[in-house]
Length: 121
Image (cartoon, rainbow, N blue to C red):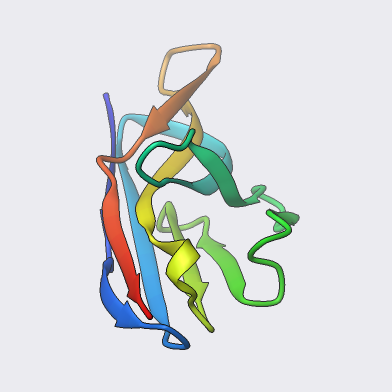
């Protein structure tokens, strides 16, 4: 009933920048936290950054001062500006949102399909 579509991944050299975007669509009543996770080969999926509907943010220590998360509540979108990228940032990045669907009285977790980010040294 809810779809998250990511865009903006790609290949970049170390020190470069990328911007990821994610748009949520469907029978959405409200969205609480939106965030970005990543998973590198052989690793568990980990939180990169998250933002509440009121704009409070939380970042993984490894990306603080390099990445910035933002959202547009009116458009149900979340973005991740990634600067000073490092090879260790290489991973599949997933958008996540806690969504209350119309006529459903609970929060449900939704995920995008993932977008590849590759940082070359």
